[in-house]
Image: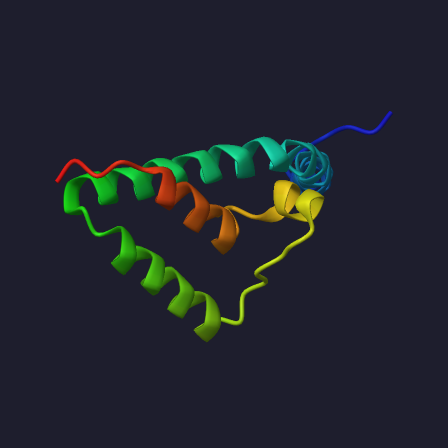
Amino acid sequence: YIWVNDDNIINYGLIGFTLSMMVMGSVKWILEPFESWMSRKMEYAADRYSIRNTGRKNAMITSLLKLSSENLSDVFPNEYYEMWNYSHPSILKRIEAIRKVKSAK
């Protein structure tokens, strides 16, 4: 039998920590699409909120295009890669959604 005592408790703790991180990494990888979807959904809501409160659609579209060009972001990402990894919608999808929003002002 292997007994845990004061001398070897740290070794068992490190083994348990390592194994739990390996398991949690796998679980997180499986949950990533859901997390990304929620984040993109909140990003669309934030865009709608800002447009309804400022009424500045064109300014927002211009700023998104400028940010996209300065950051060299991918304008046409693969749909599945975007679904799995992107926390924000692609620029073209955001612009399309912004154009559909009706301004309150």
